[in-house]
Each structure stands twice: as C-alpha cells, then as structure tokens.
Length: 356
Ligand code: KG4
Ligand code: ZN
Figure (tube, rainbow, N blue to C red):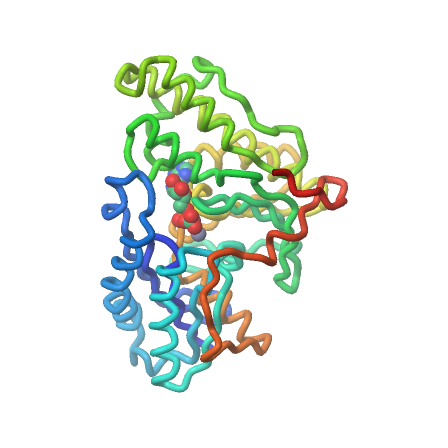
C-alpha cells in the first residue's frame, strides 16, 4: 500500500509518499522559517496563510516523484493534531479533497506518533536499521519533550514529559533573549561550539529527579543573567558564546541522562532520538556516549526525519490503515493531545499527580 502523507501542524508544509514497509518514495518539505524569523517564534495566523499558499505545490511536487502520480496512491494520511488549529485545517481539507475525489481511504494521524515512528523510515541510499522493540524514544521538539516506551504493536506508553517548556521552545526563547534569530536550536548550537560551557553557571534542571523535565527555570536563569549584564547588547561575542555553551550543555545533559535512565528503568535495549532537537549534534554525541557505556543501542533517524516531515505521517498512517482505521468525513483537527495528558509515571511506575 502506498500512502500519501500531508503534514501542516506547525511551520512546515510537507507531503510525502511512503510504502507500508517504510520505504520513502517522495519527501517534500516547504519551511516557513523566513516568515516567522522576524517574530522569534511561529505566528499562528501567518502559519495558516503560508500553508494555504504552499500546500498544493508541495503535494504536487511529492506526487511528481511517482510514475503515475496520484494514480499510484492507495490511501491518504494527514496530521490531525496536536498542533495549531488553523494550520492543521489546511492539511486536513486538502487531504479530504484528494481522498474524496479519488475515493481513497483517509486516516488522521497523531503528529507525535509520526515522530515516534520516524526511525522505521527507509530512505533510498541511506542505512536502515529499525530499532528492535520495545524501545525508548526521546521526543524533543518545539512543542513537546517526552519519553515513551514503544512496544511491538506500536503502542506508546508515556514515561515522563516536561512540566512546562519543551526543549526546542527553550532553545527558541533563549535565542530570542540573546537576539540571535530563529529558530534558536541550530543557531545556539553553532554559537555553543565557540564557547566555554563552564564559564557561566546554569542549573541542570531535575537532572536526577525522575523522568519528567522542566526547562522554564533554565530559560529564566538565562534571562536574569542577560538582564544583570545590562541586556543582550551589553554582552561580548565571547560572553554570548559562553551562555550558549552553558545552556546547551544543561539541556543536553538532562535529555541524554534521562533518556538512558528510562532505558535502564524499563529494560529497553534501544534508544531512539526524534523531534527537531534530536538534530542537535551535541545531544547525539552525548547520548551515544552514555548509551554505549550502558550497553544500549542508539538509533538516530537522519536529521531530516527528526524535524517535521510528512514521511513519518504517511508511515504512521499506513500502520493505522493496516489496523483498519478510517476517518473519512469525520476527520477533525485537535490542538492538544488529551490521551497523552494522562498516564504520567514516576520512575518506579506509580502515577504522579499533576504539579501546577
Ligand atoms: O520537530 P520540529 O521540527 O517541530 C515541532 O514539532 O516542534 O522541532 C522544531 C524545534 C525548534 O524549537 C528548533 O529550535 C529545534 O527543534 N531544533 C533544534 C535543532 N534543530 C532544530 N534544537 C537544537 N539543536 C538543533 N540543531
Ligand atoms: Zn514535530
């Protein structure tokens, strides 16, 4: 079965075609980074408008990779949430239009399931090693930071998540504080390479406290430091690089240590890093070091599969369709993910109360 996937939950308009075994036949992404850069973050209304402009050319470009275009497609999968409602609706309406014009099955996909399944994708010419199940997945993006245990049936158990900001959100906000530009992740990563991570003391939030995360305090610590120095303009390039190095060190230490701790807790022999922050070189290197020391196999999808894309949506959709799922006309958008707000577990497996 060949599935056309459409993704429009945030600031990437994407379309892809994937075989049900994960082989990627087409993978097209149009980024809106330039639209949102002047604001230091995604502006929902601008995102919806940009999706509207990009979605048809992007879908066309993906279909052009198939010998017979849309005639080669057997089903349509589209991101139904979580995400920006106005942005999601663009992809959903286009998915519905294509499915109904061709009488194809249509299924809505949870964006997070897409990220969790990214390591199964198989790109032509790239090495392919799907992680053995069960695996722990660290999903760290602009909207989410959480650890999951993924089993044979692709069921994902939430092991812990952030209590406040997502890791990518913290990167973006710190970059904005330092007036470095958007998106913050890759920019801070570049600055951090020139800096000394021990020059500026920053907290390692909740490092040895369970599998939950918290990044808001770290961001505030940077804000206070910048304000004490007299604002971002008062910092020398070396100071900016040092702040970036120290901030990145804190985020990477927390993410990598908790991810490996989750594997040990749940007896998982494989760890997957996914989501936009998983494109970070320092995180990949630190996770590799810790995983090797503890005998855990590390699976790193290619960077383009870690950030938002439609191949992961098409593949997750193919798995849903194989289980008999169909949404058709009933498909609607969800800004949040109610299922995943339940099931918060401490490291010994007991539920933890919501902390406000
Ligand atoms: O998964 P993604 O493309 O979109 C969401 O679903 O949020 O993740 C985007 C996030 C942004 O916050 C961006 O700053 C961050 O991923 N990011 C990075 C890197 N590349 C992107 N963070 C750290 N290091 C990177 N190299
Ligand atoms: Zn995402």
